[in-house]
Picture: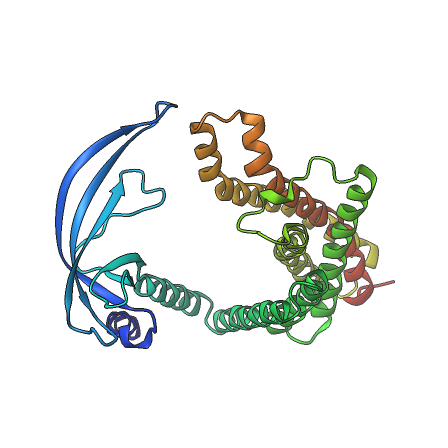
Length: 349
């Protein structure tokens, strides 16, 4: 029932938006034209005539006609269908002509959020609720950090995101693990591994002079691409390292519970064994995420006549560097977590 209520609410909430919102009530499809560029890339372009009914603002209830051109590839446009709600921009002061800027997608987003929450609560119950709470808390912290960074005009970006890393770690692990020794081990190991990997990255840049790093390839970064990329290095490696420290410390804490007289060095060796088992999958997951993020732009570059080396430099290189730094953090965190577990979780001396 809550999911149905959320879906219905997002269909009738147009008055909540200050931006004009309309609904496509009729579509007339025109002719399709074939386009061929100098690199023999083929695409098809189709024209539409849309009838849009306004859902908010002073023109609510009025209908307008507008055009839309979409391609089969859908790279920078899309096809509109009857029943879709869209955001509108007025083309004249009299508000007699409009253009569609984008589709209103809150229905899909709200439904996916509801579905994730239901699955988490159904499978994990109380722990699922804690996981949802940690995500909400981290989103709030991230938004606050962004607002604070805007107030500082980017002058202290790295320090702000370094502090955000600490807050992310403490809040997430405190909610998930609770105030116990395992939280202490995971927190110190996560922060230690993250900042150690970041330190190695900075050291390598100092030795090599940063040759080959094109910070201008950072997506949508117009003014300060370098600190934005450096901050993304810290944030990007934190998640995988936190997952690793939680897994190792949880396994070792369970060993101590089941075998209280286990020797501390045996606990350390067990942590190293667990770490070796999970390092490979974690690094592979990072690489797959990196490939999924860069694949569309890489294909676009290659289809437009760029060489593989140029494509790699401008679409993959920075992501590869970020993945390598995260991989270094994952590797160095294994002995660090094992050693801290040996010190704090107990066991026989």
